[in-house]
Image 1 (cartoon, one colour):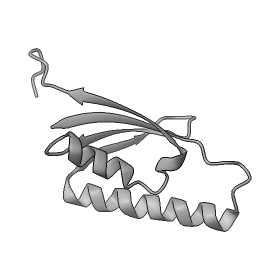
Image 2 (cartoon, rainbow, N blue to C red; image 1 turned 45 degrees about the vertical axis):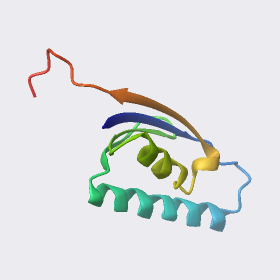
Image 3 (cartoon, helix red, strand yellow; image 1 turned 120 degrees about the horizontal axis):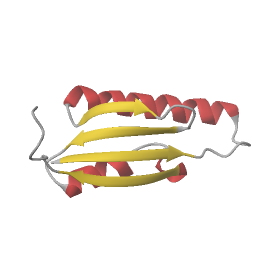
Image 4 (tube, rainbow, N blue to C red; image 1 turned 90 degrees about the vertical axis):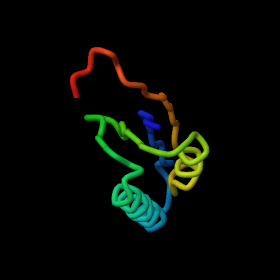
Length: 92
């Protein structure tokens, strides 16, 4: 199943710099691991925002839920999930 997911990050500005750097590094490692497995198909930065737009290919809603709740920065995120279906006019 394909899902488009928009994630907006709002880390507290007064967060300890070392804790911030550690959380960002953990987030990057987790995201790259999921990209290598094929579950996280695409990852784009939303220009000028602390946000991304991603496409996930997972077996079901529960797998996506587990992935999203596993994100190290999830306590600081706003997440919007959009289930995707093939469009009849799409050529690819």
